[in-house]
Amino acid sequence: MKKIICLFLVFTFGLSSCEKDDICDANTPTTPRLVISFYEVKTPSLAKNVTNLKVIGKDQSNGIIFNKSGDSITKYRTSANTISIPLKTNENSVTYSFILDSGNPNPAAINTDVIKFNYTRENVYVSRACGFKTIFQLDPLSLADPVSSPFEQTDPNNDGLWMQRVIVLQPKVDSENETHIKVLF
Image 1 (cartoon, rainbow, N blue to C red):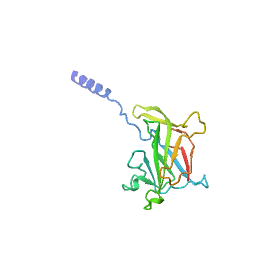
Image 2 (cartoon, rainbow, N blue to C red):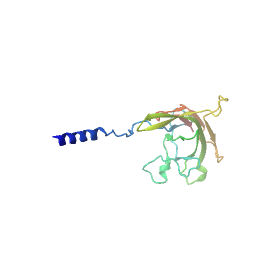
Image 3 (cartoon, one colour):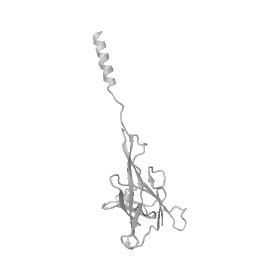
Image 4 (cartoon, rainbow, N blue to C red):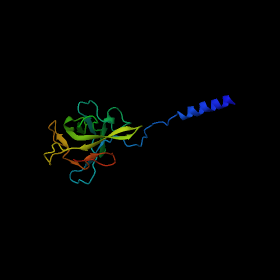
């Protein structure tokens, strides 16, 4: 009888030392990406697909992967009207080259605009399993200048800005459920 009681106690203590698994649920919101939607410049309410858009981060050789099932060339291009790009969680700005019609064999048809996004970061605790996520707030370049913008747009190749107007719709980037930047082209 003593052996059965000892075995029962060992078994009970063994079960009580187990903890539930700490696994971050895939549906848990994590650090959001910046959502950019493209619209017709003459009809700003009409969404417009870009043509072979490739987005490359500063000092990077490859672009952002838009097509997971594409080959090594097309996976970096998209022809959609909405894209999502990551912001840096360890810096207060990020610079991207937006290359329109990047797959065109005619180099004169390819147009590149560069945008530097400026923001502040806030780390928010999600859970023990998921850790922290970063929320971004697009900031003006200068707090003293009320007409300044949270981005800097340049035309590095002097081929004309294909992004004719860049409008901030939602400066707080805390989810991917809404458009943050509207681009008219």
